[in-house]
Image 1 (cartoon, rainbow, N blue to C red):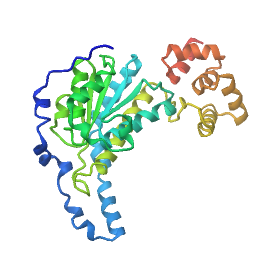
Image 2 (cartoon, one colour; image 1 turned 90 degrees about the vertical axis):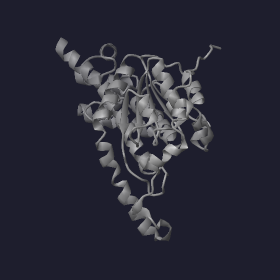
Image 3 (cartoon, rainbow, N blue to C red; image 1 turned 180 degrees about the vertical axis):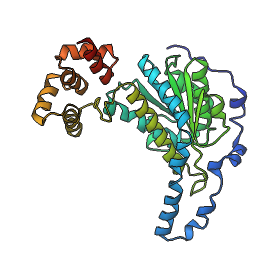
Image 4 (cartoon, rainbow, N blue to C red; image 1 turned 180 degrees about the horizontal axis):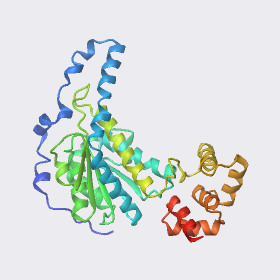
Length: 322
């Protein structure tokens, strides 16, 4: 087994990211005046308060769109060049990262290795809390070191507080190995931002239940991660128009979706779509290029290979060469 060399403790990791006292200064940990006396409210009043606070999430995410766009392009370049997107998180943030990573293969036919997640406590922490591990930057470094990050990769730390030692340690290690790094957080001026090339901040404010960042903070993080992977896959050409042309047809629902996508894109009837999908080896991108460019399967495969899987470029390239 290869030896894993850890970073020397930095000023950040030595004091565990400024210590528990730093929580006092985080907006995600402060008391929300709008939900005071929550335990005395009726069910409808509680729902109204939560709904009112949730309505602030989209506006907070909107302010971070320029930074989100930077990360979208960085992820697209990494995947195009054979690198990986690796999320790192703990607790609710780690579960959201795992969800986003796990949904890329069925949605865009990515390989499992292309979009990964690392979570404090490992996969078992998805179903049961393993909060103690998130206090260790050394464990974060160890876990990311096992993935051997390189300059081709981008590592994104997801942490509502922006101070989770496990996440900071992992991102710091990846950056030292040449990987691009980014942070998704809900507080400004954090330890995670200090070790990241790009920081996305969605300042959603205090939670309805003080410090319960599985609420507004988690909603903001899910929106942002959805934007990152959807944007990157679209930039890579795995989306045609606004349709899921790279869908991986592994169950009846996805098979039906693939048929409907081909019917819509190529303006054909159901029978023609099914026949073409079979001829294309059950690949929607190949079927689209075959019909749109009026070529056989072999030529469609060649053009998709030449365009790195970008469906639109494969079609336009064929038109230019006719």
